[in-house]
Figure (cartoon, helix red, strand yellow):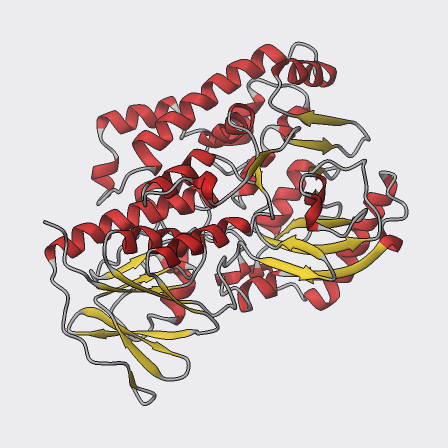
Length: 510
């Protein structure tokens, strides 16, 4: 017998909210999504200016099998909605001394590249990848792919042994340093933790699975840019009957008789619900949407946040063939830059940064013969209290000086379109607590059962999905988050019948 039809309100149309909406509507529920922005995507957004198309958030797709499972769970094939291209090579890394290394999925090519940097390094690299495969398989099977109700549920003898096997107790940088002596390779095989906004000197060594997935599964990019992913999920949602309300902000969640009974919109309207699923940044939501309820975020004063980013979106008048689709530029002091960002809360003197040139894979993303460049500079979140009106021009100058030193002497003069985005924008435009671009951090005390749960302890019909809840940040993890919370909601709806509801009404005085 199927579960009764419940009315579910989802706050936010990010990747997590969209993936959850599709699953819940497919299960037969009445689903409405309220989103303050003008379209889907959240942090996975898009900017179009004068024919230049920029993804404003993620720029690459890892673990495409998670995307495939999301579509399969609602009876669809991802290939009917998205055209995925494998980036080849994955990326090129430029070091401050002028050397570089190119990473791809061809092992013969990788042997040549690695041995050029550190003779004898290819054999340790193969062992590193083998361990990365184990880390990936164990993590998905035992940890990130399951709901845990308690710490005891997580720390079973079998799980403790698995955690030991995948080096969850080690730090990423020291773990990689066991296999490689050259500082350049140590950097090249640890910077991937910044996909999650965390330092390789503080992150668990289990994230060695990231370099493995890059080589074994590849780095992928959808035709039309990463924004094609939320567009595809939105299309599935609409086919399943989900109703979207864009440019419609939720002001707060209402608690009545110990349950989340409704949301109140900014214009004062009340929308009743059988349960509420929040896709807004979890710590921000507790602070801003749930302040009048009994829902409270434990250990809120001890929570650690990811870094933020200074972004430049540059439309330039010509194509730069010297660039790959993905390019990483390291500063002169790798460890010092992370200490500045995460410990000293300052912008590094010689920052590392990333340049994305997506038109090299999909020419439709820029006018003919031109480039749409995306520049991301990791910087501290707003805990640093930096005045970005003063800091942004100085940081911009450093980036163009470094690019000029690398041979891109005319790039600044080639700019036709330029937009910037700072940690202030991450907080006030995207509602991210402290402007932390990747949400809550992934240090050991904020992973697994220690990460904020996807169901509130006080309001049992209040759920969460997204980067700051379990299992974590990044598109694959957020889609897994949607799977996990859909399982939680299925259990809830099987036990609780829908409540009678009144029509939407004005509660401006509530």
